[in-house]
Image 1 (cartoon, one colour):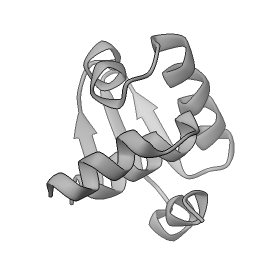
Image 2 (cartoon, helix red, strand yellow):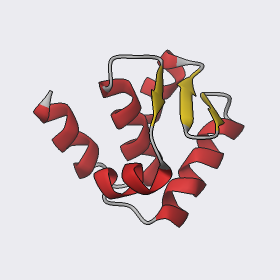
Image 3 (cartoon, helix red, strand yellow):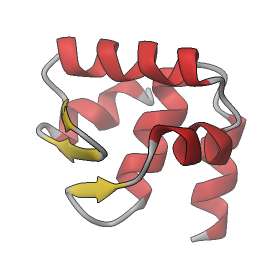
Image 4 (cartoon, helix red, strand yellow):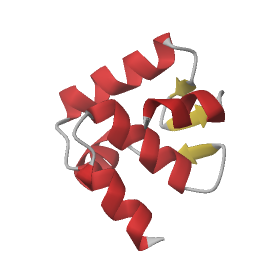
Length: 81
């Protein structure tokens, strides 16, 4: 659990950090305010929103309000390679 969190923080790109975090949660959807996610990942909110937009445009996640759902788990894992 903790090593997954540390790996997410060690990722250089915002998309990689977000992808790792979402995959490490163990569920296909999380409910969290963007401010909390940005703080957990060590990102600015602007960087987090850009990462959200990039992953949404790729069809990997879907956001609705404070809920983020994984649409393509294997595609999201591909962001990490």
